[in-house]
Length: 111
Length: 111
Image (cartoon, rainbow over all chains, first blue to last red; front, side):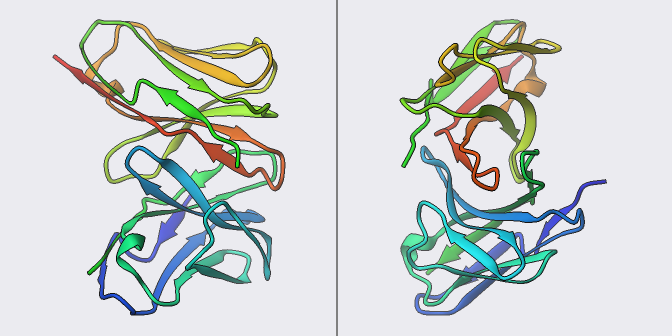
């Protein structure tokens, strides 16, 4: 059974804190993605990775960084959280040309 | 940045009614996917359409890809409460299967 897990379902952080969001997939997929989801805006791609240690910017990378040291794990880092980063964060993985499988999401509130 | 506009943004209908959701863009996509997302979960793929003019049916759901591969529609016949959710279209651009998501249509079906 396909599985993408995210480290937290809910997170509350303070402005200026460093935040780590972890995503793990057990399907040996080469591609992994981080999106944020906001009402009326759909899903917007932050970063994606097509191989270990490889990363590419998506549409809204500002204020974020990522790390992919192992194939199954893709981390999203907020170096200094700000209130406008309050959002739902979704991780996904896929084989090239195939379906993207999503995790359940992390709802982040930055106070 | 490629944009996918969905309409309507919200739809509240009664059980048994029919509805159509539209997904429009000025860009050409190699494929178009439709996802449904339920509260507290990540999006789940419903269908992928690849060929211009293609029509796919999934029980009471009918998906169509425009001839020019720039737009798509989702038609639901005799909606049921179980169809309630957020419907997202997504266009594939071919780079590591990167997807551009639409703005979403939130559907509520009541008894």
